[in-house]
Image (cartoon, rainbow, N blue to C red; front, side):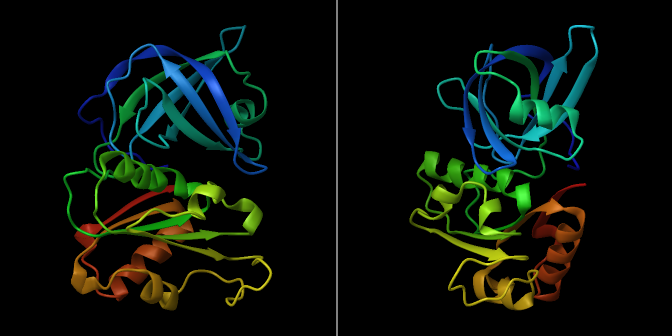
Length: 245
């Protein structure tokens, strides 16, 4: 993902973090709960670096979005396996509970939602781009915020929905709509297709409400979604994007 510069609260040194829990989200995505040596907190939307070191000394570093606020000193990542990805494959399939990795962060100070923000929030997610956006929803819950959120999630099939159980039970003040691009669930009124202006008109905030818009996903999705928001009259300065691929 495209990343911003270091922000407040950054830990610039590597530290050990023990894996204490792993949860299977989909066939290709896993939530990993780590207990680092020291973590002072982070903002919703930030990410951190994970470093793996092989027995022969070979090291690999990847950046992953934090999936929620720190709780009891623990930090959460949701990692999607990338075809041919050495780090994501190991984290998703092989890293055992109790094992250690190194972490560094948090990183990023632009693509973040702060609890002091009072504008309505529009979240547009494509695929695994749901991770930092769901972190914002979880941060809202942790703070007891009443800022209204709308989340529009584009995903290929029902089996690819990350956080499916949580999204199916949205909390008060959070409206969730999931749209499918390849296969829709039985009885769906909308045929599978990419997000369009009709979807944003139906499930997004009107531009006159001046919402903060956060868009995260693959490059093509982010470009298309941001352009549609601008077409609908949203101020480009209130559209924040993060992309991968």
